[in-house]
Image (cartoon, rainbow, N blue to C red; front, side, top):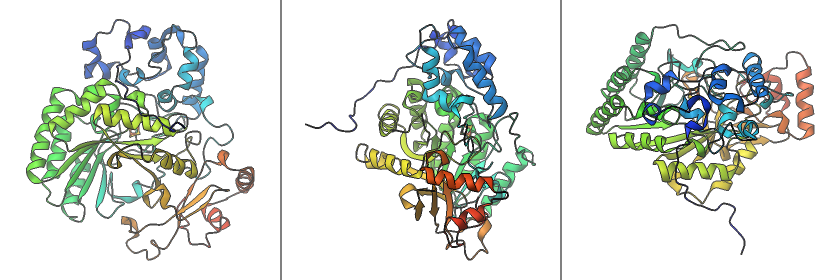
Length: 474
Ligand code: SF4
C-alpha cells in the first residue's frame, strides 16, 4: 500500500523547559506566567541573548546577528522570554550542536535574523518598498487605512511586545535600526483615535474594523477597551477583529485578570448588539503553540469572543512545506481552538528576499494541504498585492514564471481611486524572488538592474502588459 503524503497524528502540547537556558535556570513557574516578569525580561540585543543562552551559543552567531542589525535589519530585536523559549524546544545550550540547531530553528529564522541568512546576490527585490502595501497612502485619517469598500484597518499604535524580522509594517512599527528609520505619527494618540472614530461614524459603508498596530497588546487595556466600546456604539460596525501576535508571543498578557475581565465586558456588549469580536493572531510554526498559548486562546473564547483565528506568513525555512503547515494547522485547531485562516505571501519589504516564496511555490503549498483539514479550517494562501489587496493565489490573472512577474486584477476601487476609471481594468504586478527564477529570468533582471533609472513602468512594459498595468504600482 502506498503511504499518504501527510500522516495525521495528534501531538500533545508541552511548554519547553525554560530552565535549560542558563539565564533562566532559577526562574519559577509563577514568574514565567507573570506578564510583568515577561515584559521586564524581554531580550533586546545580542548581549541580553548571550546572558540567556550562556556560552553554548557560539560567538560567531552573535557576530552574525550584530552584523545583520547594523547592515540589514529593518526591525530591532525584541523577544519576550516566552517566544525565545520556543526556539530549539528540545535542545539545550549545554548539548553539542546547539548553535547549528539554533541557526536552523524556524522561529529563530524569522525572529532573530542573522546576516548570513539573507541573500548576498539579491538581499532585496529591486521593487521592494517600505510600506509595500501603500497603507499610508490610503489613510482616510492618520492610521486608518481604507482600502476595501466595507472594511478598514485601524493602526492604533506603532509598537508590539515582539518584533518580527519580516514585519510588513516595518515603515512604521518598532524602533529605528541603523538602516531603517521609522515613520512617526503626526497626531497625538488621543487625537488620532478620536479622528478614526469620527470617520467611522460618518462612513456607514464600513462594517468591519481590524483593530491593529503594531499589536493591540501594547495598548494599555483601559484605552483599548474604551476604543472598542466606542466602535460598538456605531450601528454600522458589525465585525471587530483585534490583531495580536502576542496571543502567541506573550500569552501571559491575554491570560491576565484585567484583560480577561475586560474582554468579557466587551464580548457581552457585542453579543447584545449582534456584533462579532474576534482575535486574529500570527503563528508561523507549530512549535510556537504551547500550553500557555492554548490557555490564552481558550480564555478569550470563554470570555465570549466569537473566534480566535490565525494569519500566518509563508516563509522559507520556517513553514515552506505542506507538512510544516499541516502540523501547524492541526496544533492550532486541535490543541488550542485557534482557527487556521490565512497564510500570506511575505510582502515585498527590503531585506525579505531570503524569506519570500515564488507564487508557484505558494500555489503548490495550497494544493498540497487541501483535503486534510476540515474545509472551514483549511487556510487560504493569499497574496497582498500592492494597490489591490488580498487575492487567493490561484486567482492570478497572468503569470510570467520566467521573469517571476504575476499580474492581478480587482473588483473594487480603493479610497484613492474614486475618480480613476481604469482602476478595475488594469493589471497590477507582484514579483517572485529573483534568485528562484530560471537563469534566463535572472539574467533579464540583472540587465534591468544594470540600466540607470529602470522604473516600474519599464518593467511592466517590458514584461508585456501592453501598458495596462498601473505604472506607479511598484
Ligand atoms: S507582531 Fe505584527 S506588527 Fe508587530 S512586528 Fe510582528 S508582524 Fe509586525
